[in-house]
Image (cartoon, rainbow, N blue to C red; front, top):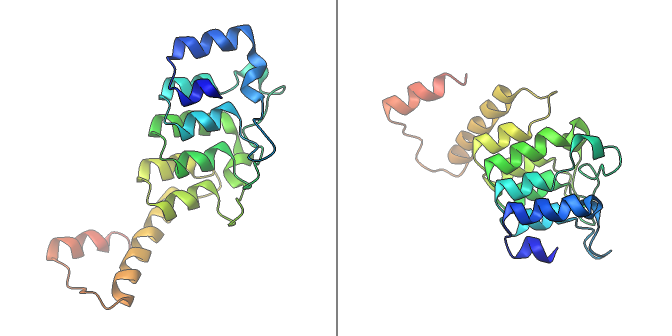
Length: 172
């Protein structure tokens, strides 16, 4: 965990994992239930380091922690949003996580993609976190409608420029 806090070079992380691959699944304390991957996300490690801390395919059955919930009922996917991880890190964790992680809800009952929408993450991150059972175009349309509704319900000006109005018609 200390190495994640110091933003180590990826070759150092790979060397550690080569000597002791089980360290990727060590939980720090019962206080948080965090694994090194979550620390790497929290301390803004490079996408290469983040990817190195994802268990390789041959270890997925042995160290399958990507769907485990911590004390906040969050998976590593939730933490990628919370700490603003790079799109590359989100995608690599999402690829390795499997469908169960996409549908895990945190203590506030948010799935990772819902948290991404709430936190204002870019649409690339939202798209990477959407479960295969949910249509991204529908989600995107609903986000735009929610923004319009919020603008109109707060009595803000709804006078759209002609170009903006044409852009919004494609969501009807």
